[in-house]
Length: 263
Image 1 (cartoon, helix red, strand yellow):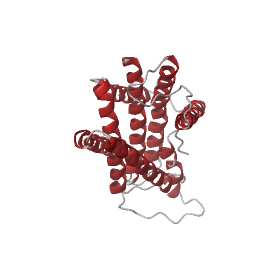
Image 2 (cartoon, one colour):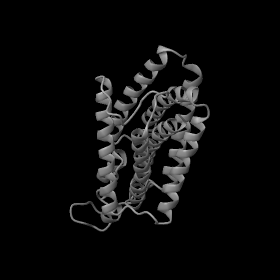
Image 3 (cartoon, rainbow, N blue to C red):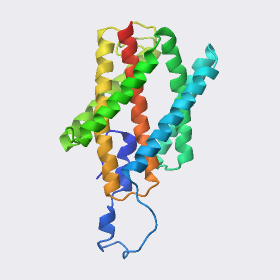
Image 4 (cartoon, helix red, strand yellow):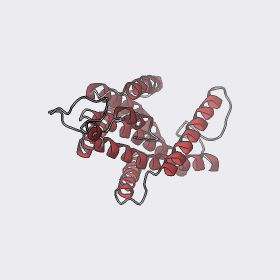
C-alpha cells in the first residue's frame, strides 16, 4: 500500500490498491490478461509535470506581484485566491482528479497568493524572496538526494513519526489562527511580515520546515510505489500536484522563518 504524510499522495494508495503485476497473474476475481496500449506512469513523467506546475505557479505569482495594486486589493486577492485554492485543492485531493487543466488552475490560484504575500515580505525585507526560493529548492534537492542514496527511507516507524509530527504542527497552526482571529495571541505564528518574531515563533517555524522537508521522503516513496504498481500515466499529474502542495508549504514556512531572522 502507498502511504504518504502528504494527504494528496496518500490517496494514491486507493488507486494502486491492486498492483499491476497481480492483475496479470490470473488472480481470482480479475479478468483474463488483455493487451493494453495505455502507458504506465514513470518517474520522468512526474518530474516533468512537477516542473511545469512549479513554473506555472511562479509565472502566476510574478503576474500578481506586478499587476495587483497595493492597498485593500492585495488582501482581497490573497484571501479570495486562498479560499478558492483551498476548496479546489480539497476537491482534487479527495476526488483524485488527474485533469491537467484543473490542476493547472490550482497552480495559478496558489501563484496569485504567493505573489502578493511574497511582495509584502519583500517590501519589508529586501531580498528575502530570493533567499526563500533558494532555500526551498535546496531543501527539496537535498531530500531527493538523501532518498536516492537511501540514507533516509520511508520505513513504517519513520512514516508514523512524520505523520504524527505533521498533524501536530497543523493542529497548532489552526489553533494559533483561531486565537489570532478572536483577538488572542498563542505566540506560535506572527502573520504580518513586520511583526516581531521572538524565540518561540522561530523554533516553531524551524520545526515546520524540518517536518515539511521530511515529508518529501515519504512522498518520493509513494511516487516510486505508484510507478512500481503500474498506475496509468494520467496519475503523474496527480503526483505532481501533491509535490507542488508540499513545495508551497515548505516555501511559506521558509519565508516566515527568514522574516523572523531578518528582524
